[in-house]
Length: 60
Image 1 (spheres, rainbow, N blue to C red):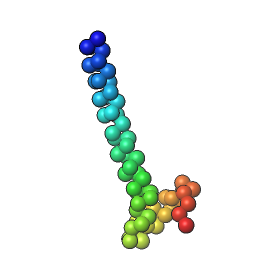
Image 2 (cartoon, rainbow, N blue to C red):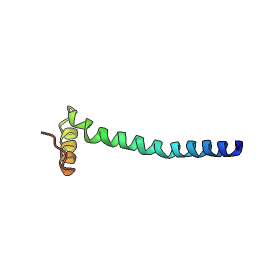
Image 3 (tube, helix red, strand yellow):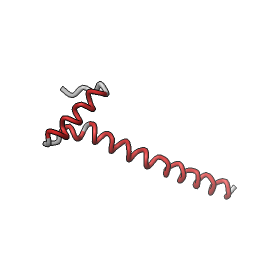
Image 4 (cartoon, rainbow, N blue to C red):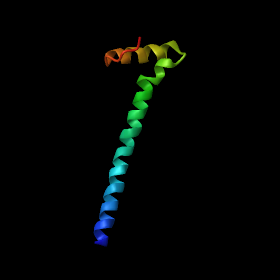
């Protein structure tokens, strides 16, 4: 029984390690699409604006 608990804990840790890069990538992507739209630089703002339009994301 103890081996089964240890194996389950190892599986849980391995599964958490797999989700971490995905969550970080999602948050970074969300910042680029949504957060950069509020930047003061016109180039960054326009790039984010065009990206939002390409995803049919309302921005006005």
